[in-house]
Structures are given as structure tokens and as C-alpha cells.
Amino acid sequence: MLTIAISKGRIYEEALPLLAAADIIPIDDPKKCRKLILDTNHPDVKLVIIRATDVPTFVEYGAADMGIAGKDVLIEHGAQSLYEPLDLGISTCRLMTAAHKDAPPLGRRIRVATKYVKTAQHYFSSQGIQAEIIKLYGSMELAPLVGLADCIVDLVDTGNTLKANGLEPKDLIMTISSRLIVNKASMKMKHQQIQTVIEQIASALPSTTP
Ligand code: ATP
Ligand code: PRP
Image (cartoon, rainbow, N blue to C red; front, side, top):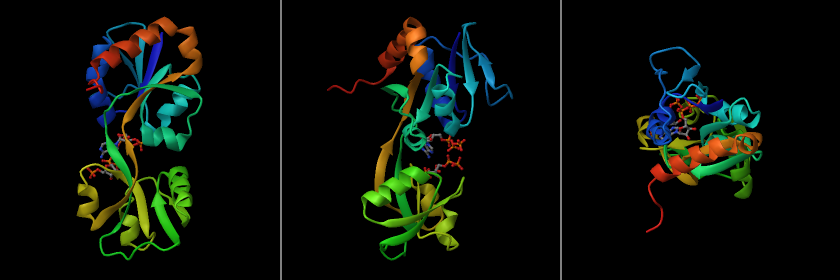
């Protein structure tokens, strides 16, 4: 049995063609059914549908052999005990600081709202800024508008969400894409099967060499 952990939504949609390249085709559609374990065209390959932030946890503990997770989630999770064999180049975006468009430059002591608590703390420390981090689970953009925080740390793609709320992107913390991750024990125990999946997905990725 090979179990792959993935979140529904944008990562699932963008990962489907890559999984298909490894001849893994889900039979159920997570948008249409409430099943959390999806059958595929292979009786011994299953997809488990979980929250994006839970993917590294499932893979780290071996509840899933492999998974697909954003680099933002992996860094925040601190997943050192996982293999990360492939950058899939999907669900790309930027982790940025953002503030009200008319906000004065940030001082040396600030309040920051984010769901990326560890990453934000590490970033502001590296900038010599003393940041009080306020953990939120969503709608970060609201925080500067209601005086909860001076700025936010959040993902930016088109910038539309920031713009719609009168905020603007400030500093780039890191560029983000989704990665294939593998449980270390599974890599040993199911080496042949996992290596084949990695190679087939890799062959479907755009070449980075000129
Ligand atoms: P959770 O369900 O755990 O709260 P989430 O709601 O943020 O997570 P998604 O919105 O599906 O889950 O995001 C999953 C991943 O997709 C993120 O971790 C990030 O790597 C990437 N991502 C998030 N927002 C965007 C975006 N606007 N554009 C491109 N990629 C994004
Ligand atoms: C993400 C992120 C931003 C938005 C950025 O939210 O948290 O709010 O995308 O994308 P943009 O720059 O193209 O507007 P998402 O759409 O995943 O909603 P959620 O965090 O509420 O799940």
C-alpha cells in the first residue's frame, strides 16, 4: 500500500496532472464527495485528503508515505525529518510582509499578525526588528485595518487580496512552491515503488536546464 497526503483545493487541482504522469488517477473527486481516503486506479495506492498544514505531520509520522505541501507549510512545520525530493513548481506564490498603503515605515518594535508564527519571528529577528507575533488562522489582511497589528506576513500571488483591503506588499520573505515530501522509513521500506513515482513525476516537470 502507498498512501499520499494532499490538501484539496489549489494544490490538489495542480497536482492531478503530475500524479497522472505517475499513472496515479483518483477515482473519487474530493469536491464532490466527503471521503477522506480516495481510491485510485491502483488498488494499492490511496490519497488521503487533509488540511494543507497537516500534510507534513501525516508524512512525518508515517501515516502517509508521501505528500504534497507548500514550502511555507514545510518551513513553518520545521520538517527536518522528511525527504523533500522534488520541487513541483505548483501553487507558486510569495511569502511577504504587507501593511496599509499609507502606513509609515516600520519601527524597531512592531506587532505582526500571521499564521506563520515561527517563520515571521525568525525573519524579523534576522532584520533586527523586535516583533510581537499575533497568531491568526485566516483573514490576516484585516489586522492592520482594525489596529490589531502594524503589518502582516502572508502569501501573495496576484496581490488582489491585499489591494482589495487597502494594503500593499512590502518585503519579500521567500518565494513559495509546493514540494513532494517522503517519509524516511517509507523511502527505505518501499524504495522501488516510491522511487518510480518520484522519477515519473520528475519527468513531467518542466526542465530547469537551458
Ligand atoms: P489550511 O487548509 O491548512 O488552512 P490553506 O487554506 O491556506 O491551508 P490553501 O489555500 O489550499 O490552504 O493553500 C495551500 C498552499 O497553497 C499554501 O500552503 C501555499 O503553499 C499555496 N498557496 C496559498 N495561497 C496561494 C495563492 N493565492 N496562490 C498560489 N498558491 C497559494
Ligand atoms: C491566500 C492568502 C491570501 C491570498 C493571496 O488565501 O492567504 O489571502 O491567497 O492571493 P492573491 O495575492 O492572489 O490575492 P486563500 O485564497 O488560500 O484563502 P484562505 O487563506 O482564506 O484559504
